[in-house]
Amino acid sequence: MRYRTSGLVVLALLLGASGFWIQAKAQLGQILLEVAWNKTLANSTAQKPWPWADTWPVAKLIVPSLERSLIVLDSVSGEAMAFGPGTVTTISGDDDEQVIAIGGHRDSHMQFLKHLNRDSIVHLQLADGSENTYRVNRTLVANSAHENLEVPVDQALLVMITCYPFNALQTGGPLRYVVIAEPI
Image (cartoon, rainbow, N blue to C red; front, side, top):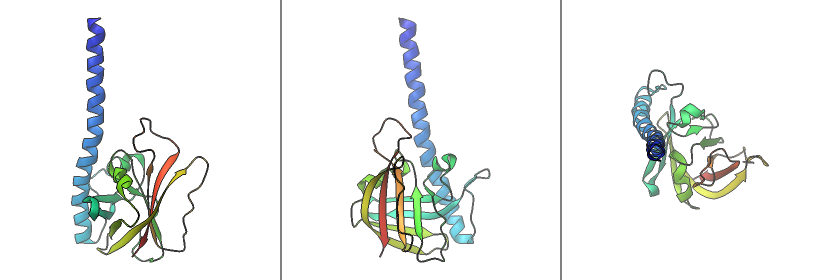
């Protein structure tokens, strides 16, 4: 019985350390990404946050009402999303009529989406230093197993996506929480 209890304690400690590591990596990643973002703005060229990175910062998402800002990466690959949200669409400063879609994990970087309401203000700073301001006009829950997310492509929008529900114990479900914001 004593060995079983010791084994359970060790297992609990390992699982706790694993959860801590994920959150620590997310926080440390944003610090390194902030440094790379500042270099990107200063040099007008994409800067990798560490030499072996397979992604780089392309934008900075700012939510003043929640005192939240995040560096957005050029990818939504699993490795990139461990460090920050990523773009689902390409961001270019040339096109005023583009849809910019950003996705990220619900239990770390994009958890703030649940606190955005209609009329919340979101800023998106681009790599050229310009900043676009958006107002949230709707939120929805989409089932990715049964429907495609239909977003108008003939107008400029900021679409932010994460898994749903926010407090789910399992990952990989089909529900997505979607926030759609229009430029102001």
